[in-house]
Length: 470
Image (cartoon, rainbow, N blue to C red):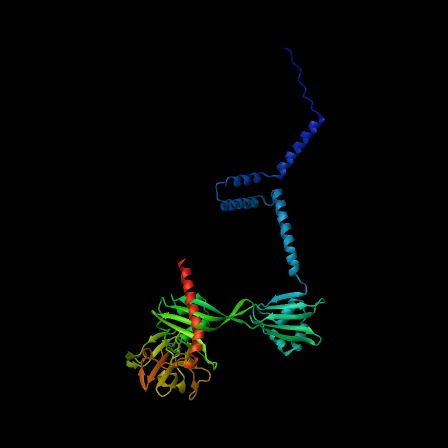
């Protein structure tokens, strides 16, 4: 057997060998730089082609988050470069804003619980002696010590770190300032006068009046004003029904583009149990303001219907009621209004106070004489309002006392009686006398004011209904 000699491996040019070595090195580097997890991430992304764009983006992010959690900082160099570029871009954009906001001579602090003027000065690097200088410079400077939680104080410092100006807003309409001058710190109060504009709201009663009014956008005080305007015709303790409606045009106080308060009700309409009542505010030539119907009759009666707002009737007028404490049949010659202890009680009409003191089972009692014909009684009061005393005079709607349980009473309530020529009558059924209508000499002027308000209320309501149908 003849053995053939082994063949020598072929010889390659040196340049080829160098190129092969370079390729091998590059492949090794690629395997080190691009981990297999990146390949898995790309597969996950590609497998989502049939999903919606939003789902695809969400799942892509989920896959990326999972990979980052598994591999720690092993991100693609491309991703690192992109993130780095984005970070650089965001930093470049934020830098001018930070520089603009950062003024070493301007400091702001918010009053926290337990803060005093001294602690606030300390927070901005001012010594305690500066507080003494400020308070000693002007008597009114002490107003800076009346701090409220959340209040902001703005300090302007001099280049050497001394106080130059101190400013704070105490309300939406008022701010106070201390400015350093040659003779110390000068106090200044800046008051912004609000601009008055009118606003419209519409509401439907589906729970209580207060809740429905708040939902419509009326404040508590405006709701009370509306109840007062219509209180002569509507008993808000028992007459309100689900489905009742109201429209109100009222004054808004605006400062610096912000609503900072409310003024008077200019006109209003209230539909109660299918009957609509309308009121317009009018100020006569003597400067006296009151509310009238659209045709000029006074909304004001000689007596308001109920002396307690939003109370619940707990016992009605009856000549044969069983007394809850005495446990025997005894005429109940009035109406009981149950309400929380301390609820204000109002005088039903103008008159003279015949009694403001204790009266047997009525406890603390006020009796008012209204002219020669009418008399009202208010019993079981917790106490009397300031200035209410026997022999004094009261105005309709004036607070005369507060709901209590004095005398023979099982719980906080007002016992209210109404007499006509000395005879007890049911306050809920008594027809109330009317006040004077618009004077003839002012009727034309009244109509010039009332008719545009009525027209606007109709227009606003129509627009609202049309929008609801779309």
